[in-house]
Image 1 (cartoon, rainbow over the protein chains, first blue to last red):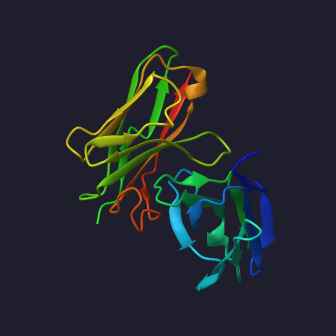
Image 2 (spheres, rainbow over the protein chains, first blue to last red):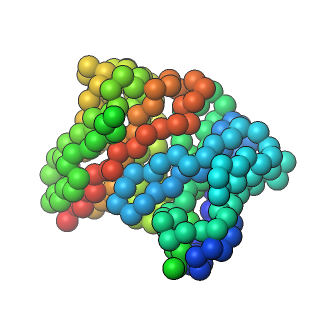
Length: 111
Length: 118
C-alpha cells in the first residue's frame, strides 16, 4: 500500500464551479499537511499548509484535515481558468524535512 | 527577490553519459533538497543538505547518483552512466528552515531540469 493515495484525474470543470481534491494517507507520523500547486513546466509552489485536524481557509481555498480518517481535502470556490494546474498533496513526518507527495491531480477549469 | 534557479532547463543525454545538474538556491537558505519527478507522478525525495552537510541521501536510487553543496550555497546533482530510467524532471528546493524545524514545509522550488536519456 502506498503511503499517500491521490486520484490523478484529470478533472475538468466549468468556470465558477466548486472543486474538491482529496488525498488519503496511511502514516500516523505525519505532522504537516500541505497542498502544492504546479503549473506546467514549473516547480511546485506552496498553496496551503496545516498541522491540525479541521478547516483552514485562505480566500477561495479551504484545506481540510481529518486525522482520524487519515484524509485531507482542498476545496476551491468560484474556480477560475487560472486555477488550471496540477495539485499535489504533501506531508512531512514529525521532526522531518522531506516532502512526501501524492501523485497529483490535474485540474482544468474551462471558461 | 530572486527565486531558486536551475540549469540547464533541458538536457538530452545518450545512455552511458555523465550529466551534472546545477541548483542555485535562494540566498541564505540553509536547507536544500533534491527531488525527482517522473512523468505524471509527484516529486520524490532524493537528498537533503543543511548548509554544506549532506544529512540525508536515502532517496538516491543508486550509487550512480551523487550530490554536493561544497560551500553551502550552489548544489550540483551528478548522474554517472545515465540509464533510460533516469529520464525525469529533477527539482531543487530550498528553505530557510532546517530539517525538523518549524516552517520546513515551506520549500521554494526551482523550475526543474528535464533530463531525457536516449
